Length: 109
Image (cartoon, rainbow, N blue to C red; front, side, top):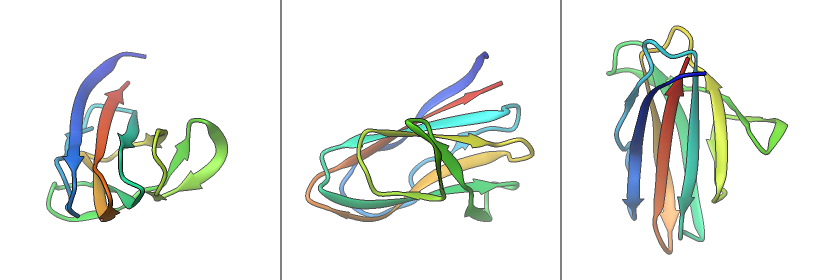
């Protein structure tokens, strides 16, 4: 497996927002890692074909391959996504309280 791109798409965010995107046009898979200090938050994983219109994408939690979701609300989790056919991905922070959240994304082939 070769890494195509590594990017921090949410950086110690304390307010809701869509954050930055990562290009996945040449990637097969994407891993997003969530960390921070927030005691309450919600992230929605998003994909796009054109970089303008985004939609929810579901991934598999690496620590529990039977856990499949388009959202997360727990710290120190990593999620893997099949991004074949997509061009961009984001992790939208839809709620947050008491602290910050960061998300790092790693696109690979």
